[in-house]
Image 1 (cartoon, rainbow, N blue to C red):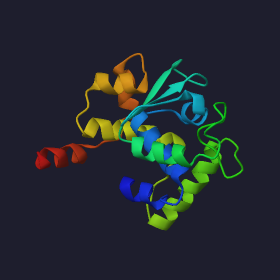
Image 2 (image 1 turned 45 degrees about the vertical axis):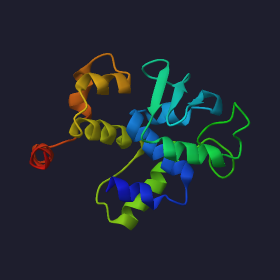
Image 3 (image 1 turned 135 degrees about the horizontal axis):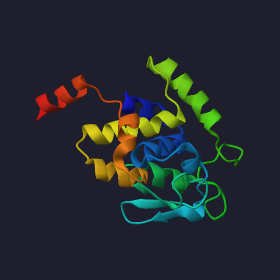
Image 4 (image 1 turned 180 degrees about the horizontal axis):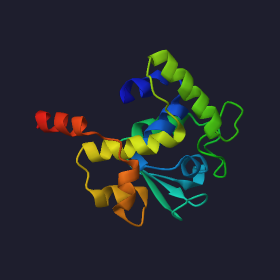
Length: 172
């Protein structure tokens, strides 16, 4: 479902970049959407997206490794990429993207893809935690990626089931 969801937005690199970065970095919507061009630090095959505003856990950075191809594609096409104070995630009117707008796009995508569950900007973080747990990332790795002070938040964010764990064991 995740792959088909990302592919659904193939004509919208900004939304693909948002989805993949939010899932990978475990960023909250306000943290991701308030980033500006100046907050993006690019390297050869990864990036760091610094949170200087609206970070619940304070300042830090969002990791961009798996999402890098999507982020660099969007950045390369960003109409305001030379304006360091422009928001990284903008709409067609060059205004900051808002969670409500993205949530409406997600709702339509779920209907079109016959995904019978609500996907919102905030649920991307939960899915990212679940994906990280199922792929075997340690609790401490997830804690640091999410910039939490402890691992106690994992129980609230991990949506995996016993069946998910069983399928992973079978695959091993």
